[in-house]
Amino acid sequence: MTNNGGAVNPFETAQRQVDICAKYLKLDAGVTEILKHPKRELTVNFPVRMDNGSYRVFTGYRVQYNMARGPCKGGIRYHPQVTLDEVRALAAWMTWKCAVVSLPYGGAKGGVICDPKSMSRNELERMTRRFASEIAPIIGPEIDVPAPDVYTDSQTMAWIMDTYSMQKGYSVPGVVTGKPLSIGGSEGRGEATGRGCMYVIREAAKDLNIKMKGASFAVQGFGNAGSVAASLVSRELGGKIIAVSDSKGAILKKDGMDVAAVEKFKQEKGSVVGFPGSQKISNQELLALDCDVLIPAALENQITKENAKDVKAKIVAEAANGPTTPEADEVLYANKTTVLPDVLANAGGVTVSYFEWVQDLQGYFWDVNDVNSRLERVMSGSYRGVADVAKKHGVNNRTAAYIVAVGRVVEAMRVRGIYP
Image (cartoon, rainbow, N blue to C red; front, side):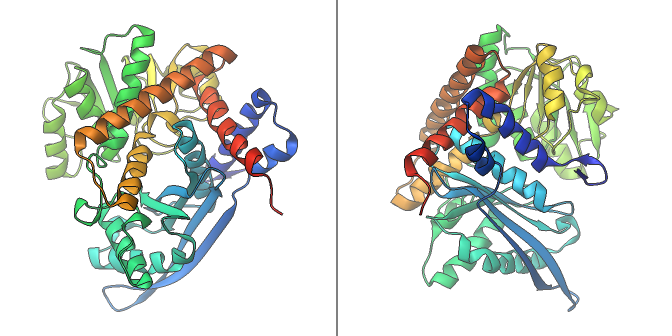
């Protein structure tokens, strides 16, 4: 089964990943079946008044995948190609991601089918508030805590927090994470995904004896995760960024580029393409560059069975969700490419979201050094746990991460039992 005009169905990928690790964990068929289905799915169709006075009906989803380890956690994305199967897959990946870094959360995800680039700020606010009202019965600090994702941000979260709080009659900062600092956000949250990715790359490079100073990096997707990861690996690890891309195209500069200058150029021109001194290349060419580290930070299914053989990077660090298909994983593993899977490599975002939630519940806030040092401990320790399991079972890092994560979820399910 496929969606998006022939692309791989992401939920089928997520289900197959459960099957792969089930045999290593020796799970019985019933438990495996539970793990392959979301606990709860809500589809809402809701009207929004547009700026011209007309009304448009939008469709949104919230999928809560598993709550065995605690309240659900997961972002909300606004995108024209959002599908229910995509949201299911992302909710499943959030479940494993939270478990792999030992957070007391289950996984969820949300999405609204819309084109945010063609909507005004007022239209986005009305749509967000209406969507928040529709999903309000199943979200909250003890149930399900949304966060930003593709084309949503701290402002989106502020609108959701305010809408939910208005319905409750008092401020509930812990209902979402990724909020502005002024209403209970956390220091360090904005760069957490990229920073967590950087810590995991650093630990993997030690194992592979790759010196980070002067190492070459290619970054596909120059959004929040990609641009922050690029900035941090160049600033803190001494890495050389030779290529970056966005939805308009990719650029190459073999002697390395000034990430801050590229960010400034993109803000001014709307794309990295055309950056002075760079040469334009295709996204496929970027993925096949001869470099030490490739960071896919765009959308799903970028590295496939067809192009995996062209990947020359020693490390592929998945800052995006689901950028590599299962068939591509096998090719990369056979070629001795170290893949740092999404459920580990981009778990920095949800880890600092957890810190934000904890701070909101306590009403006590930490400084940025505290946040970053705690994040470093979580990411380094989680990488080591996954790498050790990969070695023990002779499997790739993704399968190892799933063995760790699914094992933790299954243990929580076993201890709790099935009620009634």
